[in-house]
Image (cartoon, rainbow, N blue to C red):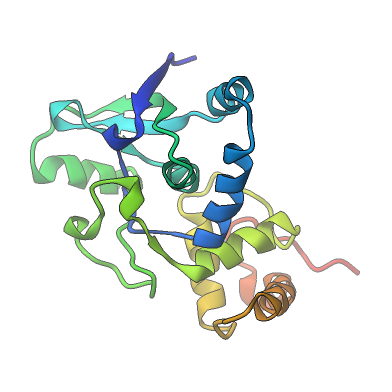
Amino acid sequence: MPALIRLELQQIHPTQVTAGMLEVEEKRKHFAALSADDLKRALKAAPIPVVVGRDDAHYAIDHHHLARALSDAEIEQAYVEVVADLSKLKGDAFWIEMAARQWVHPYDEHGVLHGVAAIPKQVSGLIDDPYRSLAAFVRNAGGYTKTAAPFAEFQWADFFRTRVRLWTTPSQFNAAVQQAIHLAASPDALILPGFTRARA
């Protein structure tokens, strides 16, 4: 098992543009309420997987919501697990390899693809995609199953983006979750990762 490394949060660079801020806020509240010992145990239990790039920069390839929640909670350090060292790759070669391994996803809050220059330098710069939160809440409610498929939540977010009207109030969000749970079990969602057949 790879060794865990404790890093300053500002040393961890994102590989995507967005996060679902409702999901981030849930995590922030959770971490902010933990004692120092419980926080340390929780972070060790869920290390952020990173790739080492040029000049010893560490790029998160998952757990962006966790990282942003820690930032919002003013928790300055996190534990990471190095899954690959690509530090010998320079310039575009690094990002080409990251893309080939499906470790970078520079889509904005509208689901539009950008160049890697659009990715913020720090996790604190991640912008809100409300449909990422919707996808997370639907998954947590059992609408689909968690899967290791790359960018599964992005795929679900884009699926809901074209079918569920954007909400402006908590009650509208709750209604959106219920609508999305129903949609997640529909034939339209059949090819999405984690699809769960409708229960009789």
